[in-house]
Length: 134
Image 1 (spheres, rainbow, N blue to C red):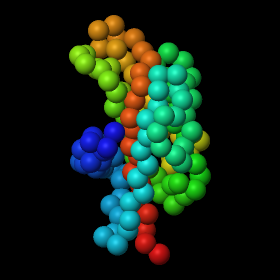
Image 2: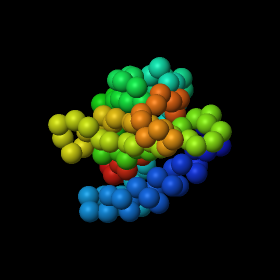
Image 3: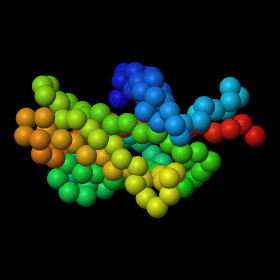
């Protein structure tokens, strides 16, 4: 996870800010970002990381819920990547869920490209949120 962490954060910032251009507000230069990463196995068990809980909802569908204190003053952006796939990796779809527009709960769905069906998958994720300096 450490080798791909910097690349994932860079891609998240490059593409995440474009994808959410209408609602994404850039933080002031004095703000320190909050970054949480982890690894979740195909059964929904947390293998690495802290500050969140994970569960396996159904075939290929997972829920990641961040502790309230982790992103207390910000709305995080999250991305996920399949682990240990040699060819035809499943594509990850990440959705923010919950009752508010700044929910700290995400669903991750992995779709097998050959079948178009969800498939269980061990995955890494990273979530980033900017916090204004006080």
